[in-house]
Length: 110
Image (tube, rainbow, N blue to C red; front, side, top):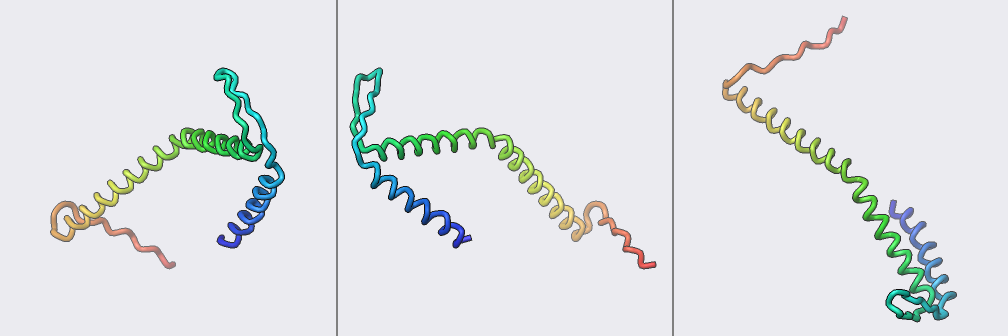
């Protein structure tokens, strides 16, 4: 897994550096309602756009996965409750309180 991470990260990092070096020229962005003009290198605007897109995508995925996370929490809660009930039943059986444990039939070897 570590090699795969490096196989993906190194080429992407090289592409990003080459892109930034080749796009150092200034670009003007007019923020229309504010009558404000920002002059930065082109790669800065591209990276900002990529960052905003990534953040919006992450937020949308967070909200779209909410039902799955809720279902997982409910299932984890049910598992904890069942484990607690099984532990209490085993402790009660050892103390001789409550119904006797049910023996499962053995597998037939005919």
